[in-house]
Length: 228
Image 1 (cartoon, rainbow, N blue to C red):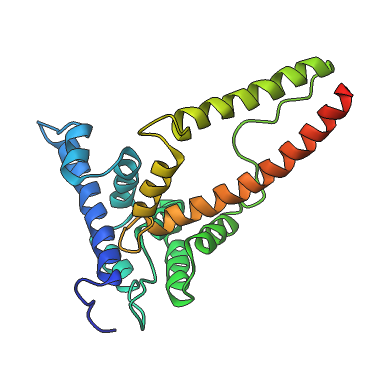
Image 2 (spheres, helix red, strand yellow):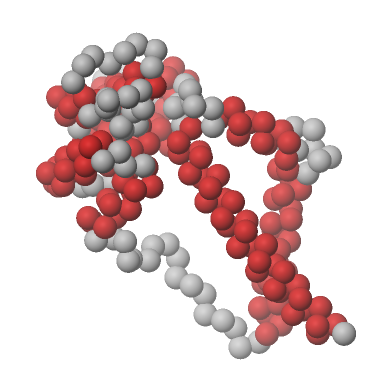
């Protein structure tokens, strides 16, 4: 495998991975020192958010320097597209520390078969046996009183409308939908390290909005019948 070309998408992916690894190592080092730096100072120094702070800590804990070099070596393929990115690494971190053999197999296949982030995430879940498990809160049992359900339905609708008005309403100079789209367009630029993750989030959001649109149309039609 040849050397990584400077100022390429592959080099950007490798640099992002190595930078976050060094960030994680620095967090652990400062924690063990007599004068540890506070979280905000470290985040400001590296220009990262809270999520990257904790992911970088986990990265430095689960990977050795040699393993990071091996991981970065898998990034380069036969073109300028990185086989692995920092977002791929985030999903690899879901594999427990005592299952390195599984993790190595997954990251090798992800690079060799050019897996997308979503494909890797699905394979990680499948390998860990979590694909069919439900997570989060249990579903609330339906009330026997239909008026209670109607109140909850209205409350959820009201919450969504308030959110939309606060974030996307046209009367908000810094929160219009056009402004939000402009910001997202900057984030999804190919040169941005978070581009792939955000694109996946946008696709998921579009799918959810389509489902919401269908559900709202059905609910609206049925409720209007009751008013006739």
